[in-house]
Amino acid sequence: MTTISINQFKDYEGQTVRVGAWIANKRSSGKIAFLQLRDGSGFAQAVVVKADVSEELFTLAKGVTQETSVWVTGNVKSDGGRTPLGFELEVTDLEVIAESVDYPITPKEHGTEFLMDNRHLWLRSRRQHAIMKVRNEIIRATYEFFNKEGFVKIDPPILTSSAPEGTTELFETDYFGQSAYLSQTGQLYMEAAAMALGKVFSFGPTFRAEKSKTRRHLIEFWMIEPEMAFFDHDMNLEIQEQYVSYIAQSALENCKNELEFLGRDLEKLAQVKAPFPRVRYEDAIKFLKSEGFDDIEYGDDFGAPHETAIANAHDQPVFITHWPKEIKPFYMKVDPENPELVLCADLIAPEGYGEIIGGSQREDDYERLKEEIIKEGLDETDAYDWYLELRQYGSVPHSGFGLGLERTVAWISGIEHIREAIPFPRLLNRIHP
Image 1: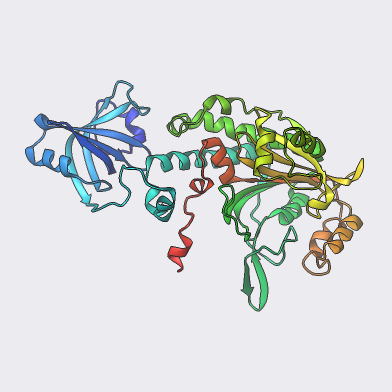
Image 2: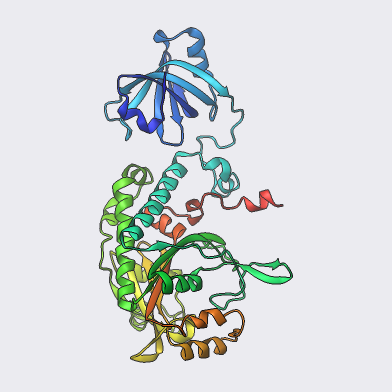
């Protein structure tokens, strides 16, 4: 007997196979029982016809409970195109592996907070399966894109001795008598790697200790952070729009069924292609004023309503460039045409999903960077001495950016809550009360 997974049904039409699965749902109509199977690779219907099986097997099929694990044997048949899979299983045998009793997440509607508190089980649902498949595709396409572009994957440390962006909102821990922090970005380390390997990227967890209850923020998330030697500001924007276009189109091509199940407007994703619009910060402020926003002034950062208004004026992701120096981190390079501005950009996703990328050309002049570090009240002789040294030994123009994975998954999937885009939010308190 050949044991296969659900996503292999198409290769076994007309054959008898065995599948290990869980019962996602079931229904019956007199002489036929319909079992909705899931095995991680996909979902499929198994049909049990009373006339074709023993009375004992049919009774078992009608009584099997949600999330019971089973071995199912049957013939793979076309379902006439009724489902995205295109095939179903005509059951000849059914064996219970382990029974599930009183599974808490039933087919009825549940509140988001209840589902988050039961995330370890909610992850089994068809909706979460679709989101995780889209997330996986974005990760796969990320590696594919950067490998094609000649980037080298580098892993920066998760425990660091300082705050790369000068903030005090960090998770602190004792590191053998010294303070260490969970990383909020691998950027500084990636700059060092770029000086050795030219084009590099990291992909790892980052942590932000700021308390936030908005649907856009997470305390722990994953970030993709490329750094490129010999790249100026414009080149940086070009690689960003190429990358975002690539992952959006890869998701559209390879996760069409999942996106349709989530109710995503596929036409909007199809429009995501480079180049993207570019709006200078000062022009964005003027636009917001013209739209009636009286809560924003030059020198202010944008909130969610401001980002949404800017995004809604475009069909594509949009760059907000040339921000005031005073509200951006110390490492950004000053605009040579206006010392009050820095060569940076935030990339705002369409449809109200907010910023998905922050990036800039980095300051490559030793004296200017040292001056900024001192100005910020940071310790240039200890935590940042090595970072300054990168500018002493063959400094070059270089740029980089960071893309937040979960917010990007939320945008591409078209889901409302960013917490659905991370596999296990809200479980920390249950593991470590």
